[in-house]
Length: 293
Image (tube, rainbow, N blue to C red; front, side, top):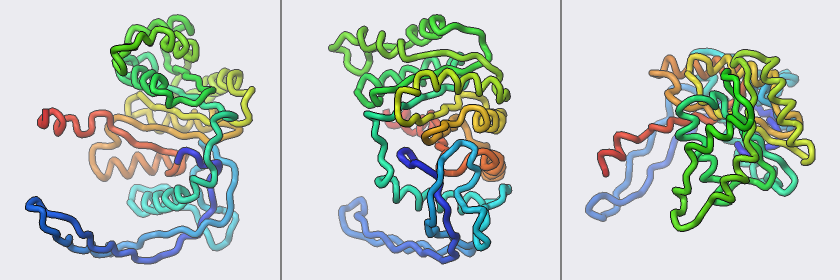
């Protein structure tokens, strides 16, 4: 959850939570009432927050391990651990307003892991530029590319520049903004599973973050799913933000079915808490949109 300053301890409380029936309108415009959803046979978890602590990428759980009455959900293939993590994340989200970011004082570092790939070049960097173009980036932001290919900062910027366009507003010349954006882009080569290489990346990020009170970091994993866990482990140990929150965006297919989804989630929980993960599929709904158009 963006804006959270720390992971929080919580007590799991077992309680069934049946959903209420919803009132809507049918196709002919007349009101209709949907059937209430029955509570599942399994146990649902609600959370009572107890304390707050510093956030890091390496925090594998938001539960307080020191409390004798609280236990962290052990990584497993089943859905119980995932449900508990999501419940905690949802409760933490309610406190997001209490920890709103001050982007006049804080820095934001965005790391694109797999930066030399075709997807990053054609999709991710143009999208980041569009966000900046619309004024949605904080004042102090920097973008770092991380991949195995050997490349200098200037070569990296040339790679990005070849795919940037002014598609956001065709009436305005955005060359000035494009130059400003590219000056905020840097490249760090390294092996995906190397904690040492991620530590070198962290040192470069710190050079640009140190003038701010706090630095938040976002890692965008534009890599094959087979190395998600490997990268998450190396990044958690080598490049977590020392002063702010750290979040990870996991893209592409997140498992091929329920079993593989649960397995991948359980593996990532060894390095990340649920509230640190954002799962996206940039082609989700592609077929639907194509059919509509």
